[in-house]
Length: 174
Image 1 (cartoon, rainbow, N blue to C red):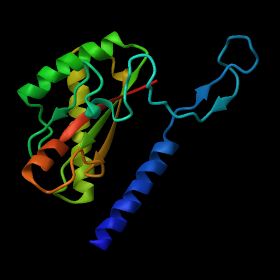
Image 2 (tube, one colour; image 1 turned 90 degrees about the horizontal axis):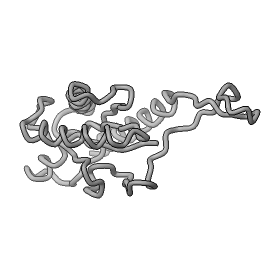
Image 3 (cartoon, rainbow, N blue to C red; image 1 turned 45 degrees about the vertical axis):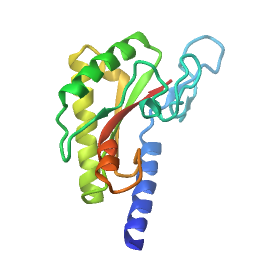
Image 4 (cartoon, rainbow, N blue to C red; image 1 turned 90 degrees about the vertical axis):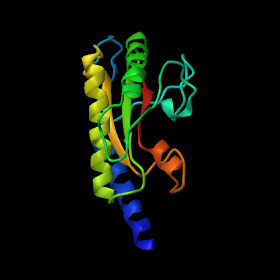
C-alpha cells in the first residue's frame, strides 16, 4: 500500500512537471504599441470563474449550465448514446463561449495499473475531443489531459463509486 502511495506521489509530480514544461509562451505588449511582439512570459492558462460562473472543478461540479461530464463503461473509451447526447449540448456551450479554451480531462476508476489508467484516460479524452470536432468545435480550442485514477469524483471501491470515476470532464480556461 505504501509503495502504491509513493508511485502515485511520483506520478503526480511528473504530471505537474510535464504540464509546467508544456505551456505555450504568451506574448505581451511591453512597449505600449498594441502589438504582441514584446517579451514572452510563461503564464499558464487561468481557470476562469468570472463571466459565466465557472468552477475550477469544471463540469464535475455541476455548476456550469450546459457543460456536462460524460461517463464511460468499464475499460472502454467508446462513447455511449447518453455521452453523445450530452456532448451535443457541450458542443453548443463551447461554440457559444468563444472566449474559453476547454480542457478535457480523462479519468478512470482504481482498477488497473497506473500506466494503463493514464493511457485509458487519454483515450477517453481523445475520443471526446474527436467527437466534438465532428460536431464542429474547433480542435484548437480544446486540450486534453489524462489523470487516470488520480482524481476520483467519489472515493471508494464500490461499483457506484467506480462508475462515477470513469468519466471525461470539461474545464473552461481563459
